[in-house]
Length: 111
Image 1 (cartoon, one colour):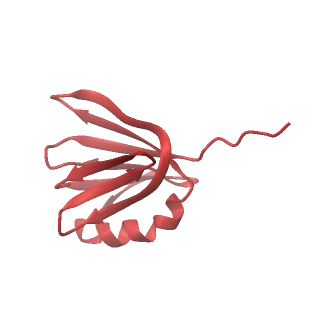
Image 2 (image 1 turned 90 degrees about the vertical axis):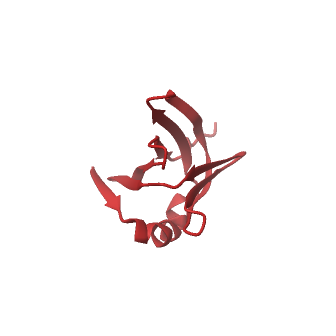
Image 3 (image 1 turned 45 degrees about the vertical axis):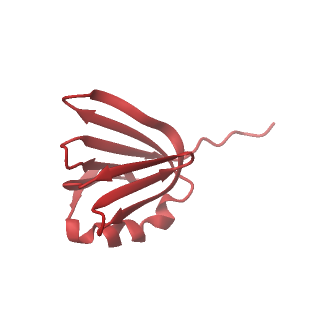
């Protein structure tokens, strides 16, 4: 596995290019900060997309039934494993670390 820091000037294009790779993925969002501790925002929910809006300076993580917004992000890193991107870490303007873990949905066997 390797971690890759993405430059702010590339955020929009980078996540637009990954739209197809995110199709069919589930996402869990964990928020960590000194003032709130660790909080789980979502756990294994269908991911609809991740976009960066440069005009509003925000990330939108669209999940089935939930839109998670990260205002004024300062840093983005991705964890790349053998199956592609496994996690995205975004540090918000308030210094909150937000980790989006990507997983494939479980396939149930038919009898």
